[in-house]
Image 1 (cartoon, rainbow, N blue to C red):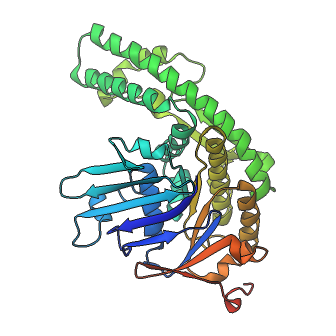
Image 2 (cartoon, rainbow, N blue to C red):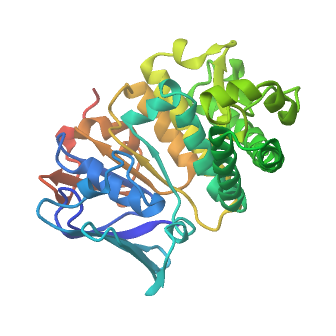
Image 3 (cartoon, rainbow, N blue to C red):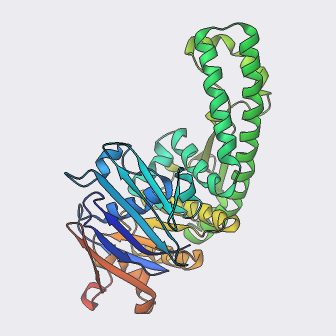
Length: 372
């Protein structure tokens, strides 16, 4: 899928406007605070039902307004969007004029992948961030995963309640058996997905970070010791779980570690190399989504100039060509876009200037295209 037009009303500091996108490359240039990230946030919200910047939905609506609207028309002419009433907390979802109750219905029609300065949390934010990244991809790639995860989460909640309440052994044993069964299902789905992701990641590391690609390994930790049965682990740690008041092992505790020569990759790479690794990982996930899903991912990259020098941006430009999906990039300065457009015809991309929430089509002038 590609976004042909984005329409927003009262979202963040964006003026109520409609933006017509290029099906391949789109650049949004403006100062910090101008509204560039808000534009990406609007697209992300439509694809995920949440912001990548805040958990407080109330902060997404324009000052002194009660409702915001985000909608897109895709390259095939379909219309999908949502409106959110802050006062009532109600969200209205429409796809081609038909109302839907679940935000997940939107995600079936639009797959958004994003890399922002906050994406470094994948390395430094702990297992929770890596679980979030993995499960995002699995939602699109493994179509049964959402229901599997909901079933697991329901059983996990019940088992935790049993642990806290110190119920009789029969009740706890029942929910522990259910918990083990659902953990194994979720863990197996994730294992297969991670194996596929590793294969695809090697392709993109060879393009973006060829000097280290052969020395990168990915370690999948299922949430309990690999060579032990989950039931045995839970039984051994029964007293510990009682003292903590929740399940210490299971599919909810899985992690993925990225290693370079058996060392945590964030300790071995520069900040720029870390960003290229994040992009390789995101591209790999995007390819997996495109392979199995009826919608092609849309890639959002916020602040392309941060951490990446001219050489890195040139390499990234080649990777984007190979990726073959719609890409939306923000930048503070025009000159950082040079590597992306120097060998590209003017009709193969669009450039927009963003200022005080106003988004205006523009061009890249010769004096802005000089090499750094």
